[in-house]
Image (cartoon, rainbow, N blue to C red; front, side, top):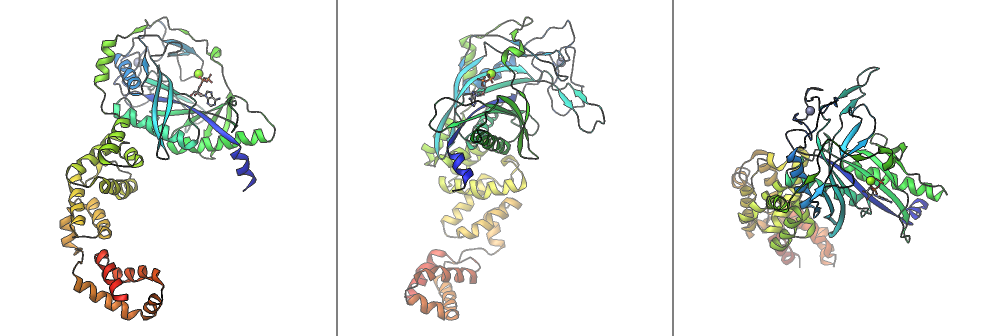
Length: 483
Ligand code: ADP
Ligand code: ZN
Ligand code: MG
């Protein structure tokens, strides 16, 4: 084993994520400005979100409803009494000089979500979910010797979702992020667009010797904007920390910036403490009181959530956790699956085709399932053609791809391209005879006991029949003829 691997194995990572999710409200957290992405800079601003003196914020009730909805979906306790606080810091994209957030009394606490790791379910605790406002954007690129500030994003409603330090590997962290995004999208409270920054995460990570109970000193990595980068940034940072410790050094608690170009994290600043922010209760906003009736009303609007859907898929369709997890990663994918099964598709077969061919083709085209012209009834019909022996599983791949590209039915494609499976024993026998007469050497070897050559013969027959021979019949006949 390489020296580096041996070092890595002595340690375990401890990870906790802080996720920021922009809420899909039409207007901002404390004013009526639009939240729409992509407008001309500073066109969606007003005296409130630009921090003019003498103005008063008013809470967006929809944002509160969305946060309660999310907390409920993530098994949190919803506080009947919570309040806003000012988090003070200076930065040009924060015109007030403070961010309105929640501190001591967040709206949601003590929840969890489930992720699937190696086919097993793992719970990750949610410490808290609170509401806050987003900051604006500083623009440094392509602006010459100046920097610009765009305040369109200032005041956009955010949820901050803080996890317990329950995550142990970079892979689990990425899985957690995926699940987060899935739940938020099911709920319709956030679009989950990581590229545009509507879903962002800061990753806290420390390492400890495998046998040690206490956590090590953590660093916080900022600027992570994709699932792949969550994994990459953590992998890099874990190795870096282990190297420091192995060299006899100490980890300093600090904030580090992920640089996706170099694939490294760089020190940004030493960690600020809560008291540096001089948190204090927001005097311009009244405390938030929510009654059980409203919470229950919100609870009733929850759709079937991914965890329950996944469990139902396992029970109802007999699918492995892995399949069920993937198929429930988007509501639209789950619906497509169930539609196909309802139309007669055998559950595991439908899952295989969707997770294999369909996802592969959609990924290649960078398309979502909503944009797919191939419809559930067409996959169901194609599966029937396989079942009744009209086409082989191998040919079906060609048919499927053609259906996906053209939107035509399997039957039409099979007819037009002459892809009907050959199940006629006479025709197959003819092909086998030809293969046998051309490969006498192999025949002798096979008969001398080299049985693995059967695969070779099957391959030759399939080649000769352009993949159309019924493989089962080919196998049976070959065995007979060769014995
Ligand atoms: P801070 O005081 O730096 O804000 P918190 O205790 O509020 O730290 O935790 C922030 C995030 O860091 C949470 O997601 C939490 O799970 C995670 N975290 C806390 N301690 C550790 C640790 N030792 N190693 C890794 N992550 C940690
Ligand atoms: Zn405004
Ligand atoms: Mg904290």
